[in-house]
Length: 237
Ligand code: PGA
Image (cartoon, rainbow, N blue to C red; front, side):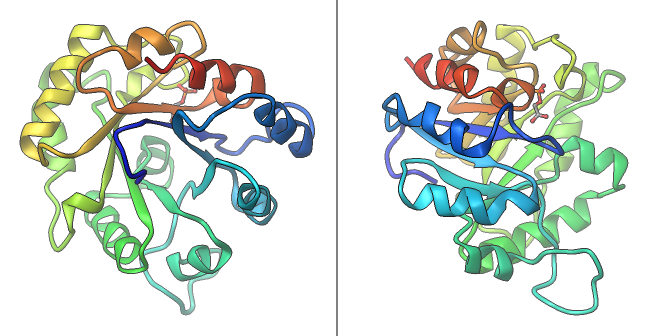
C-alpha cells in the first residue's frame, strides 16, 4: 500500500455520512495538497461508486469497510473482493473490532477474508487490538489475532486499535503504542506497515504520528469532517 514510506491515513466513516454533501467534502480536500500522505477513504458500500469516481480524479484511494470471504454465490447481503476490485476499490478493512463484536467475526473467518482479498489484488487492512478486560494481556491477544495461515503477510497492513480507545476519547499512551507497535513488528514482519487507531483527532494526530513505529492512522469520528481530516493529514511529520 503506497510505494514509499509515506504515512498512511485512513478515514473510516463507519455507518455514517460525512458532514455536508460528498462533493463539498471532496472540494475541501482539493484545497490542499494531500499527496504527502497516502490517504484512503473508507465509506459505506452505498457510497463506494461515488467515492471511487471522485478518487479517479484525485490523490486519495478507496477502501471498503468489510468484504466477504467468498468471491460469489448464495450469500445474501454480502459483497465480494471481486466486486470491490471491479469497482476500483483498493482494499478493505478487515476484522474491525466492531465487526468482531457485533457480527461475531472470529479469527478463522478473518483469515479467510484476508486470503481472498489478497488473491484479488486488494490490500487488506487487518485491525487488531485488546479489549479493556484484556489490557494486561495484550501480547497474547495480538499474537492470536496475527497468527495467520496461507496469508502473504507482506501484503497486509496492520492497524492497532485498542478496543477501549475506539470512540471513547481515550487514546492509548505513547509508551503503550510504542511498545505494541514494536511487539507487532516482531511477530509479523520488520517491514510491516502498522497504523494506530482509536480516538485520533486533529489535536493528537501529530504526536501519535511521531511515535516511532507508527506508520499512519486509522481515523473514525474525526474523519467525517473534511477540515479535520485535512488537519490530520497536515500533521504528518
Ligand atoms: P474513532 O474510531 O477514531 O472514532 O475512535 C476509530 C476506528 O474505529 O477505526
